[in-house]
Amino acid sequence: MTRKRFYDTLRRGGFWVLVILIAVYTLFPFYWALNSSFKTEQDIINPATYLPPHPTLINYQAVFSDNNFVRALRNSTVVSSLVVLLALSVGSFAAYALGRLKFRGRTTMLYAVLAMTMFPQISVLSGMFSIVKDLGVFGSPVALIVSYPIFTLPFTIWVLTSFFRGLPSEIEQAALVDGATTFQTFYRILLPLTAPALVTTGLLAFIAAWNEYLFALTFTITDPGSYTVPVAIALFSGKIAHQEPFAEVMAAAMVVTFPLLALVLVFQNRIVEGLTAGAVKG
Image (cartoon, rainbow, N blue to C red; front, top):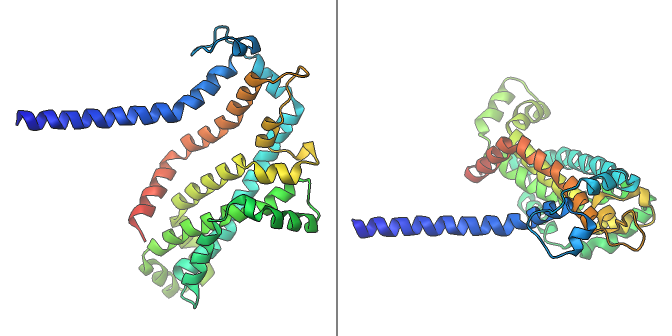
């Protein structure tokens, strides 16, 4: 019994050591960026320290006084929000059809949607460039709203389809017996039941659009006023000419990270509910 208790304690201790190592590995870059954002440029040049020797908010002041960055922050908010709205609107209809309706080729279409997520962005960049040019929206945020669904929509459809499949068929049958149309059944009964899935997929789509860099750089490179935050940070010049503003870049990175953290904290219950529901249904 003593030996068994010893092995159990050793196993639990090893588990927590592994958890701590993974937590340090994943959180340390975020901590280092936060630490650097409160340092002066001189402190950045000096030997590295785990705490800022002279904490300052000058980097955040420089970031928010940069009109290009503030405009990029606004562009990212608008683009990401519209992309999420578009992905959830179109994705919920498509997921309902693929998950609840029976028609020929449904499985083939579902796997075709899944296959779309396997293509790297660079492989479709030239094609999207031609489409954006033909639509006449190159160099504007509209180009991003048009192109981002190519990677947010397939994921949204795939995830929501599993949720619609997992809903009891008796709910839909009861609604039809009561005289509800197919659209009323979808909009008033089934869609509210998938709220956890909508929040989860919407948040992931928002993060993907918020952090996207390749399309944003390619389609807005001719107009600095259309930059999103990843492009604005990559091209951040700082206040002083011929200076590499590491501390200001770290402050800008923190500014664009905090909204995502806030969204996750606000919707964490819905996210957990959506992930666990997706794990047991289907």
